Length: 178
Image (cartoon, rainbow, N blue to C red; front, side, top):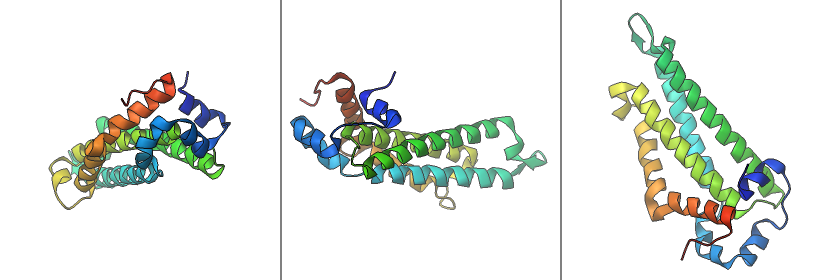
């Protein structure tokens, strides 16, 4: 079972689009600036991909106990989970892009993609930092920069929570912003 926003992301049919929804739902006007576009979703996805790529390259180069750490089970598990989450986020973002091109993307869908992609990017950045051990906190790699940027996106103006409230509105039809 999907939320109404997720239902559309997977079903491919929606009436109205962003403009009609904004006109009909005045409570969403107050949060419209948070949802101007999906740059946040795409930027987070790029950060996640860079962190994954950094961890993958490092794990192939870092030798421990006579072999690259990429050959150890836990490292492979972490890399596999990272690429799985990135792929899911790419599919979500791709579908949202299709809906936007068709003029059918809704506020709930945009919000869902933003929150999801920032959340998974932050988790991937943290995992990648751990894979690099002590090197993960140095300025030699971009992981810590991505982590700091993503942490700020999660917290500024309560964006992460706001996106959850938008999803809650989409699910229940009840405005919790008051």
